[in-house]
Length: 219
Image (cartoon, rainbow, N blue to C red; front, side, top):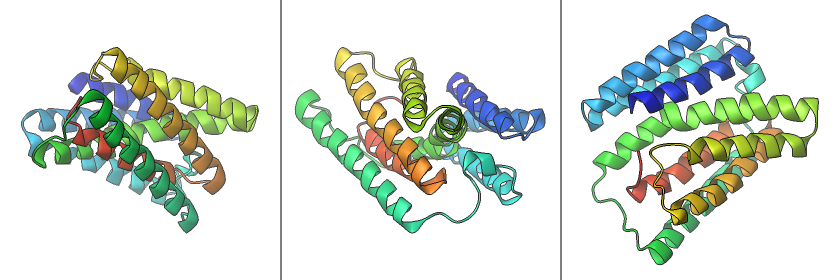
């Protein structure tokens, strides 16, 4: 888990560097994620330490340092509603599909799910949205075109999860992951382009991963 958190820290640090925050902010991001991973290794309650990271990112945003990542100003209400619809639809479809085709049952008990969600909120989703949408997609669509930005950011997003050692490596899971993450990634690019904010995509991703965590696979 510490190694995975280090990877998330690298993504977040890169996004912060592209936003002009400097090396110091990147180091802080890596240190906070490493400390949270160490705390999480001690037990499910320790995973709550991951929530420090989005609080710190919110502090940077309030100081106006993350505007280029889409973390500044109000968030359009319609974009949030669209994000909830996207995340709930993909997450619900995943649950139904996995139960019917793979026979996967829901994870019993809330402890592991809540710990995984804290990890998602403070590391997994936060780092991915900041880097793949706020930094990579935003730069690509400004330099080339919306379509090019979507293809580049979404392809990189899917590859990031396919090489994740925590993803089950059966062909069914790999193909399914590529399918759902491609839809989520492209949808979040559109949400970012439409709203100008990184928040709606984060909401959609958190809802999707909440459904994934209920399956009890990976971490």
